Amino acid sequence: MDIKTLYTLVAIADRGSFVEAGNSIGLSLSAVSMQMRALEEELESMIFDRSRRPPVLTDAGLALVHRARDLLAHWESMSASLKKGTAVGLLKLGSVHTVASGVLPLALRHLQRQGHGLEVHVTTGLTHDLERAVYHRQLDVALVTEPELPRSGLDFLPFVDEALVVIAHKSAKGASDQEVLEGTPYVRFNRSARVGNLVQEEIVRRQITVRSTMEIDNLEGVIAMVANGLGASVVPARGVKNEFPSTVRVIPFGNPTVTRRLGMLAPKENPRSHLCQLLLEALQAVTTGPDELVRKVGSA
Image (tube, rainbow, N blue to C red; front, side):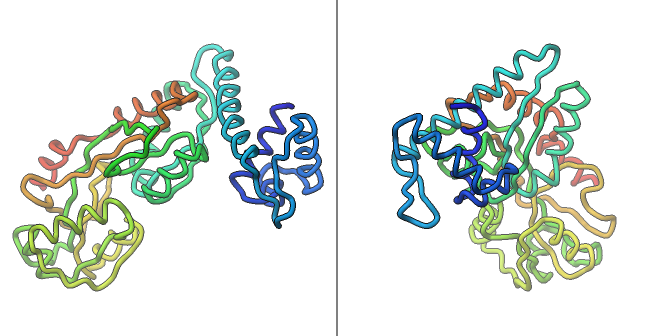
């Protein structure tokens, strides 16, 4: 058994077929099949049920994949620790879209400036999908909105509380957040996203009456619609430079301002904990607290 074979096995589990696994790691179908046959012969165990098309992992195969993920993580961690001077290694990272387009690039640049050779493979998605991927070890860690109750075996490590704000075109009427939302067509941010649920819960709690004209599944699209005078919305304020165009008016949502907590979701038994800790510290270094953000918004 060698490391390359274990990487192939994990690729099959992640991709769902020998063909897709081979495409992802640059091997032909025959090469993948030969590796898996040799692995089964070496272990004297049936890893795949070949009576089904495509072949699926048996219970023994699923158990082996779980162990293989741990072994590969330890292998990469050991390899990184032998390289002197800086932290290096590969981190399979999941992120909600608003973090991937907001503070994550700043955090990665922060690590780069410190000389760390961290290689990151980023997958974007919704909080519940990313949580599932971390739980099944398809991702090492994920940056998400705080789940209501994290799955057993996972830790949620917060790095910032982001303020939610009402955004509208500068020509929009109304002094308060409620007046703006009730007097302007409402551009709804993706209700499938955890932050979209938080916004909807607060709108219902405060009995704010909105006229929803469209729903958009990405923050950049929402901001563009608002900037062109097509409505108002409630979005997270990520605290990045030039976040909103000059045509956009920003008002805190709620008093006190409603926030969403962002954090890192990671396995409790995490062989890449040293890399995760570096990323967590970088995220904490580049994020802005909600109180400071609210003061900036209030003085705008």
